[in-house]
Amino acid sequence: MVALRSARRDRWLLAPVWVLTLAVLGVGIALVVPILIFWGAVGLIGAVFATRVLLRDVRSEAAAADEPEPAAAADEEKHR
Image (cartoon, rainbow, N blue to C red; front, side, top):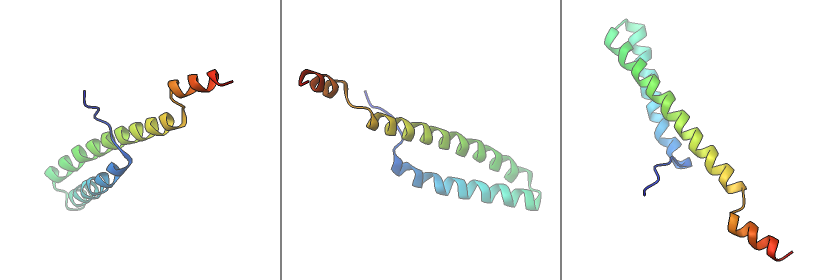
């Protein structure tokens, strides 16, 4: 099966999402345009969700890199 996980390089994709979301929300609030406020809020929710997913995946990759693989740990115990 294919594992759909975020990688550290995917954070560059989030930068334009945050910039565009905050720009649309800012313009919508400044000009009092309800449709821009609505889409800015939808984009904000999406950006927060995508950021949480990215952070979850990046942290789990870092934690997995710190732990030795079970086979490697078993080999170390055999050599003791």
